[in-house]
Image 1: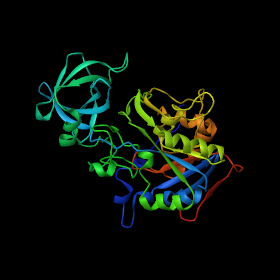
Image 2 (image 1 turned 30 degrees about the horizontal axis):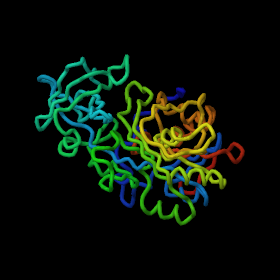
Image 3 (image 1 turned 180 degrees about the vertical axis):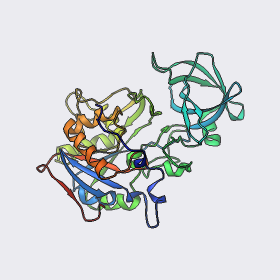
Image 4 (image 1 turned 120 degrees about the horizontal axis):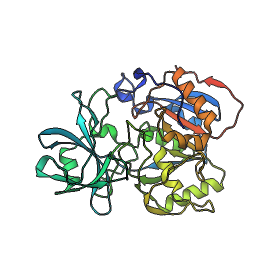
Length: 363
């Protein structure tokens, strides 16, 4: 699905919400709520009032890695974006060129045998493309401990629409298991950003209103910012306890809302033909499309995606093409902010006739 609209550059969120003025925190972003083609405007802090007792939120516990590292390809400066760690110890990486503004632009990877020098004497040896016909991501083998390299020399991946580098803490969500039993070196190359607006206060209010949480894990790879490719295979886990919570919520009439496209991809990879979610872990290459549809989730909380982004197919699978187009037109009219520090979109099942309304504090 491609939307016939253009997102003005000034609608890119250049800094996190909490840095845009006094008295603001992560939950200060705006939230567009759609039920079919009905659209309502809220603040994210109003989420506990929008959801109801019995609803369940599926949240991704993957921490964000400091996945960008400076290196050298011969005499040229490059930036390596570490994407995904394979079962065989190799890493999928994307090579980027510094653009002189503190960010990067694409650099064709390969050929096989190419060596990139990194800090601490670590060298990356290029072996093969991750996907045939695509030179963006390559499997490489590191001569040293890549996880330690990221901890010591890495920084969060940053794109040109942001204003400046931010500390890694800015890219961690309240649900991230970083440092709390997470597997060493495991994490997401880019933040599972739909969960970023959650604060401990919002979570407590949701729990007090009877909304439940089901944690899953999906470690995201590097997004294709320029070519908008579908996601490659990613490592995921749906624990037994979360599978039980999801099945119980569905049986009890609660709405199952995924927080982020990563949560949809994980849980839809763990559902059987009978519609029952079961514990699962491993790799998923599932791409949710309107043709495939969804079997588990009733709704989705997500950011605003570029008009060419492959994630829009997932939104269409959940809400329908007309509803997605209507919502994005409204987001442009309302001057919502895009990207990981921007505003969010909550898709819920349709309940009321078509309308556009606004809560009292949505200006």
